[in-house]
Amino acid sequence: MTRELHGTATLLRLALKRDRIRVPVWLVAVGLLLAGGGQELAQVFSSPAERQVRATLMGQPSGIFLGGPGYGLDDYTVGAMMANEYTLFIVVAVAIMALQMAVRHTRGEESAGRIELLRSTRVGRHAAPAAATLMLIITATLIMVVCAGSMLTLELPVRDSVAYGAGIGLQVLVFGAVGLLCAQLSSTPRGAMGLGLAVLGAAVVVRGVGDIMEMHGSWLSWFSPIAWAMQTRAFVELRWWPLLPAVGLSLVLTLAAMTLQSRRDLDAGLLPQRSGRAHAVGYLRGPLGLGLRLTRTSSLTWLIALVLLAVTYGTLAPSMRDSFGDLPPSYQALMGGSDRAVQGYLDLAMTTLACGAAALAVALVSRLHGEETETRTELVLSLPIARMRWLLGWWALALVVSATVLFLSTLVLAATTDAVITLDSVYSDLLLTWATYLPSLALLTSIAALVYALSPRLTVLGWVPVLFVVVIAILGPLLNVPSWVADLSPFHHVARLATDSVADAAALTWVTTAALLAVALAIAAFRRRDVPGR
Image 1 (tube, rainbow, N blue to C red):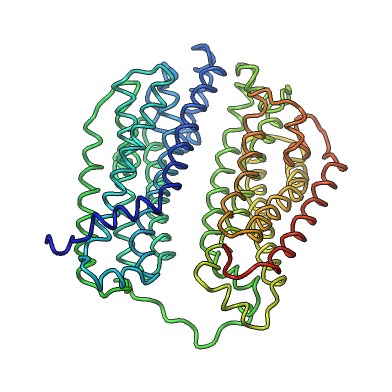
Image 2 (cartoon, rainbow, N blue to C red; image 1 turned 30 degrees about the vertical axis):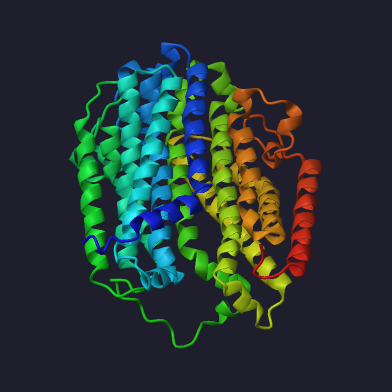
């Protein structure tokens, strides 16, 4: 067994070097989300009465699905609020991080041919998954420290803060082990990541449905590892034993991955590959069709997520209408500061959905970096396909897909709202709002394409405008952002239902012009640099 693990330390040092930027970025993002979000909640809902209004909303089925099992709703302290409302989002984020890390350091290295090269030296068969496991343990420990420290900045109890951080950290190990197992089943990194995300999605749904079936969780909830972190009842009635199943499952899945690796050939997966067509279909001959084929799974995943979010927002509309007057003034300002509670609430819902669509657009453009690093772009451009056509095809794909996903989720939001509450012209109003978001989507897509065209290594900077838009759109009213800063966000100029205001035509014209200029500059830059570039 020692021989099979030979070289683990060397591969671990390599993994630490490769993730020296990724891991700190994740740690900072998680820490800022918890500490910053907690400070905002504590300031907005400063009195027990205001927190109880919030608890009433979170006790609804939609609130339980997006939040937690509802511990502490009868005495909604800041700690209970954080544990009930932030845990799911943090767990999903760190689970995606763990899946990416596990797949990248195992199946990704194998598909790139580096594992085969290393195995020709004195590197054991299990060295790569063992190094990935150690990397996950290190990351999980850091996540635990960051989460616990963030809770302590809110002046919450130490034991509960440590338990909360431990629950989040163990989710890194659980879903990291899921990623290791999926890397043995699929023969490609994309397939392994797809399997892992399917497991994560199933865990989210099982936990949500189980908690809706019975307050504080039913028997079904316990089949989801996400529920184990929530069942510690941190900041309410702390108990440690629900964390034990997470430790056990992580060990079992990791050992299963090691065992399965011994039973397969290098660069092969245990799941049989589906035979492809003898001849490619016609639409794959162009960049747009090829990009659609390569991104159809991720696009469908984003669509399902935003549709579920739209359903949740729609079903909560009556509760928001009834409790709007009892909400803190700053929270009312977040929804437009109008006595038209439902319209302001729908404005907030549309902003959230548009932020998701913008993230999808940038994610699709960012796929260009992967296509280039894996030499597929160079292969395609060796054919009679112009660089402008290649880049414009992916730009159009990102814009059309994100706009379509936002359109469908808007329809679902309108239909769900119309089913639970009477509201005049909800369909036409929401679809008009959707249309005013299109120039903003085009601008964010163009900026991401421009960053990629200038330097593939800087593709991640394409997310900076999206982050700015999200902060201004969601937290701007709470943070009292100056008007000139808010005007820099393209989302600030769309139509608003709460005030019956139409979109700022002049501003949207400038946004559209900036989008066209950015994509033109992207084409010019892409035509002048090497492929693959730096």
